[in-house]
Image (cartoon, rainbow, N blue to C red; front, side, top):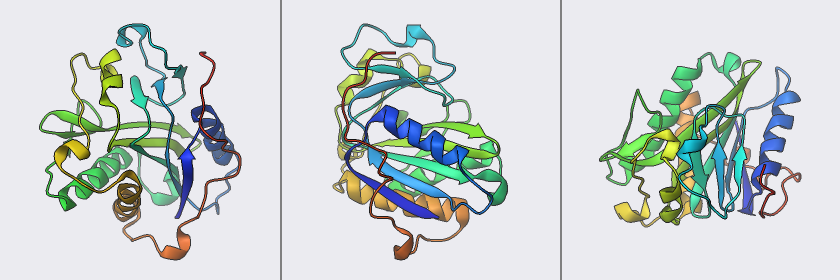
Length: 226
């Protein structure tokens, strides 16, 4: 499995197009990849997204995407881990993948003395009832893209404009507020290791850690509202 990083903020639409292109071009021998990055401020609606979960007008772009789930927020200080995996080759289904993703985040937080867990009825990872990580996936021809978002050190106020993941009244938290001093870059690396261990049973060798994302990703910026 290859780990790729994008320096700075990665434009959401460009990243989404890059994920779709990567998945469409896959062959049976294409290595799986994890993309680590951060986005500029953006709300994204999943395929099941309902307009009423955006509580009022915002001056941040709202993009309807092809992942599962409802509305969420991405912004600086949040670690995004996009998983571009061949599920057939790995030998597990969507439920196993979701459990593995949630388990990887819980493992990472446990390393810092924080107890966290997923919920069967509401995918994601929670600490004392507060959501700290959101999940969303797209499966196409046995392969997945999109992934998870871990709140690290960001403006949580942006979540006040939405029902996070479609749940009215759901509150969110982040690693900084839980006393974890590590920054987004360090936690992203640790999360990639935990994902690799959960999904493949191995650690990520240093040689497999790519220095940069594919060149198709421009710097972050605003998008026209869809």
